[in-house]
Every structure is written in structure tokens, then in C-alpha cells.
Image (cartoon, rainbow, N blue to C red; front, side):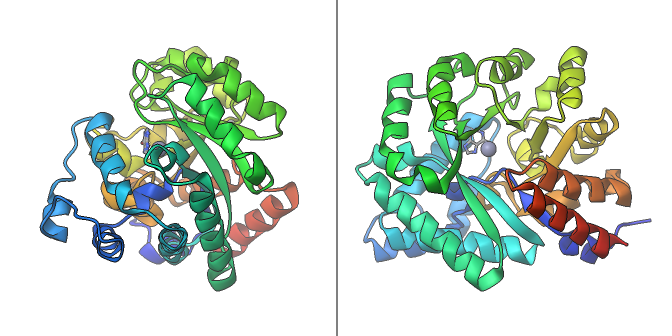
Length: 333
Ligand code: HPA
Ligand code: ZN
């Protein structure tokens, strides 16, 4: 029997894989361009949306980095974050750990402070307005070098008490986790959590490097880990959370068809899989849309497991996790 949509949206959930720059909707891109007096090379929202056709990760990244150029002021980052939380709240998200890419902005001349203070203000507004709690994860762009990552970590120093962790994103193939082993070690010694995109397009060996060399606390995507039975056993045994993004996987051709999405297999193999939206403005939907994409291939109990995993895999304190798990029990009965 089909799972009612109200069950999907009503289920209390955390979002653990969301690039805030990837929540920039085409309408908002035009608004920010107008208020910052920037020309964008598209005549309309429809024309921009029509350009969102990707056959691999790099196709998306090229347009995503260009889109971020409309973000110029603290108010832009505040408004961007608040708009995301409004949509996330409507989807039943009660906690979000959001990625941001400081280098995308500092490399075009914005101070780190504009980005960080704008996002933090948006997160504060969202908690006051919607009751959604959140934290920030600073991502290093892996197509840039180790020195640039160190410079970014240094720029973040005054904000480290308000940043939960570091991550690794951008073009995966050719930029293995080993490139960032030292900067992740430095981040770890600052008390930051560590996550990394691995196994989205890159081979299972990149996932092994992320575990062994970056000492990750959570794995972003991880789809290609399934190619290695030993790795699956290791991830399951360690209770490693995987932040899986079904609509992203479809849009970037990591998976050909929703019916072939590996989420059911991941759950059967005992992996702590979670469902997330990645870059919702570019990939066709927010977190509930991602649950909807795979729900036809899952049982009601699986959706509950996915929501539970989102809190178990979060960086929330134990007491908050327990409280959210009780809310799931109260909702699902
Ligand atoms: N993969 C890698 N880098 C990214 C992504 C992604 O899905 N989204 C934004 N940056
Ligand atoms: Zn991502």
C-alpha cells in the first residue's frame, strides 16, 4: 500500500547533506542579481531552469559555482539560509547540519566574515521562526590545493566555536581524500567533526581513504562503497552514517533510475543510511521530495529507520537525539 504523503512530510527528520549554495532557487538568483546590480547570462527563470541538465557532477558544479556569484552581502546569505529553512521546516526537518563552501566566495573577494555571519544570522532567524536547530559544516573544495584549505581553516578560526565540522566537496575523481589528510588532522585537533564526500563518482578506495586518512565521522554519498563487500561490512560494523541523496544521484547520473536506487540495499545490508537533498534548487526537490523518490521501493518501517538514522548520524548531543527519536515514536505510533 502506498505510504501517505502526510507520513513523509510529518515524520520528524534531520537533514545532514545540504549545500546551502545549492538551495539558491532560480527566482532568488534573479532577485539577488537585481538587488546587487549584477548581470546574469539568462533571460528568464525558465531559461535558467532549462540549463539544469547534467550528465555528470562537473556539469552541475560549473553552473553551481557561477550561480553563487550573485551572493554578495551578509543579507544575501541570511536570506538564502532562511529561505532554505522555511522549505525544510515544511518538509518536517527539525534539525539541519548545513554545508557551506567559503572558498567559492573568498576566491571572488568576499570576506569570510560576510559568509559566516550572514549564514549564522539566517540560522538564528530560522530557529526563532520555525524552531529548527542547525549547525554549520565548512567544506574545502577538493579541486583546490591543500594550502588553500589550510588558509580557509585559518580564516575560520574566529568562528570555530560556531562551526560543527569540516567537509570535503567539489570534483571528486582525481582529487582523493589523501590530498587533505593534514588539514583534516588539523581540523580534528581543533575539536571539529570530519565528514567527506566519497564514493559519489569516485571509487571505493576513496571511501577507504576518507575513513583511514581523514578519520571521518560521517560519509557523504558513499554509493560506490557497495562495490566492496568488505567495505560495506566495515561501515555497517562501525555504524557509519551515509548521507545519501536520491534526486542528486538521478540528476547527476550516479543512478540511472529511481527503481535502481541503492537505498533499499543499503538498509538491508545494515548501513546507517539517511536521505538528504544535496543541492535542492538544482536537483528538483527538498528533503521530502527525496523521500518520495524512493518511497515506492520501501516499507513504512524503512522510512522510520531512515528518519531515526538522520538523528543517530547527526552531531547533536545524546539527549537531543533521544528527544528526537521519541518524537518519531510518538508520530509513527
Ligand atoms: N558533490 C560534490 N560536490 C558538491 C556537491 C556534490 O553533490 N554539491 C555541491 N558540491
Ligand atoms: Zn553534496
